[in-house]
Length: 179
Length: 305
Image 1: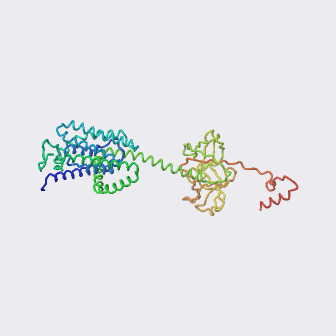
Image 2: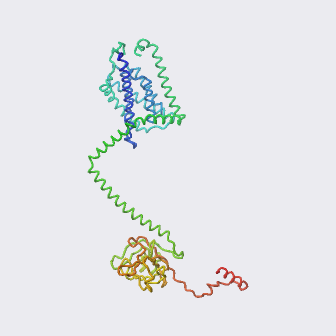
Image 3: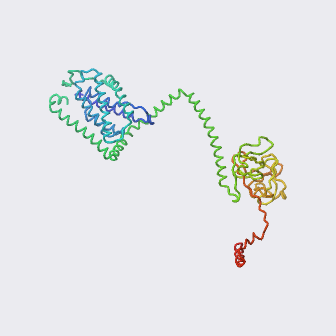
């Protein structure tokens, strides 16, 4: 490759898509067909937010919007609402990504937790406002907490398995531009 | 992009804001459209799922199968417990099967009881068999109906199909039925195609013999045996059974009633035979008026004709 930086960027975008497909696949497997009292963490939000904080250029807004919209459709959620909220949350984080570079992980975790909680609450509030049927509150709370707990795991997986680390201050890309 | 951000940051930021706003607006608009016109969006969703999910099928099916196999493999680890559980279940199922078979037969009998058509003058009292004689030498059963229910000695008792015996001994709440197989049982019968009268004599065997036949050569195995009504105790025409021939060429009766299981029995209310004192009254009837005597007589004659 003549231009290594864009190729690695596209590679990670493809990797993101592969992860999305894996998550969708795992959730669509009909292993648990009876209603359960527990829920899996929403790993997709975790991955989106973790990656946006580390490498904003890997996840363009349109990619996030498209992926979230498709999963809205596939997981029988109200189409568009969750996607819009996740896009807003991701853009909020993207605008502060350069601030987060110097912060320790615990603060980042707290901030992401606040945003995920905000996304969930906004989702529910909007559903209440339009008088749409909502998932049971207990199950939603359970999923929120387990998602927050899963965030460090997702970050560690991204960091050590996929090599997505925070951009160090003053780091430049292959062409010598500041990230 | 990185170059743009570096060099033109002052105008890419508003553009980016517009882009974000546009995306969020489109998504929320889709959500509102779904809320307003749900069927259309749901159709789209269905079409999308229909397009996407079957693509996973090649992987979904084997992975599900593999997960099931892993689950199965795990269950091998407790195969002994499972075996015990299955044995217990099998025991339970066996008892249930027995109950089901019994209920089926009971039901068939009850249905037969319901559909039996007899002389409409005959009414019956149904009773449940409480006990048998308790002795191998006496063939009788005890019913849970008695004097309280108007049972009288000598009444015929049937199950759904055929004659079982007669009442002999009535208590307040119970009545004993002497079965046809009892050695004290003597029932006047008619053997149907030939119309011969005979006596069914119980001899403590499952097939009571037929005795006092006038012409035994006219009776063939398979002939129907019904009560004759002689003696005025039993109503005529109750099914008893079929004629069979035993090893030493004696005529015996294969009883129609299911003696293996006597559960519900019907006691037929036999009416005391009416004694006709005035035959003329039966033929002519009461005559209300002398002047219309001729008309009445012609009418009666027409009716008789």
